[in-house]
Image: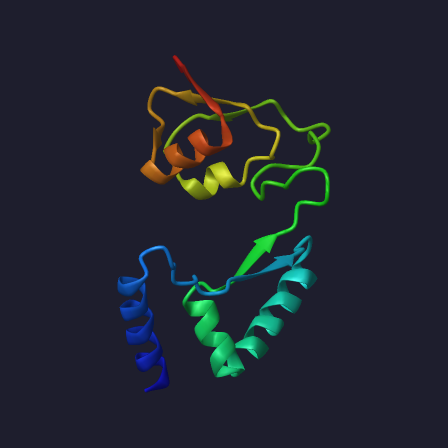
Length: 143
């Protein structure tokens, strides 16, 4: 009820004094450093604890309490890219027949940049997506 009365009074006072502005809700921002699975689990536990408090849960849901990843390290690490080039990884792979699935492409070493495939080889749509995501070039062979 108090909240409703406060809102009505704010609107009416703003009409009387156009230069007066209604203050925006206070937003807090919490910087979170997640560099490992242990950090992620610790943050999840902390968030569950925060959700026990009804007021804090409402602030998070209404975007008045935000979380921001810290970038105090070198540069953010992309989950699908290796930190360093993979040593001794084969530069190419070869498929001679059949259907190639996403699982087959996912099983290739991270350094693979070229796939040779016979004319009869077919790729599933998910395999094609994975090939594109990893930046692999497909080369068709005659045999």
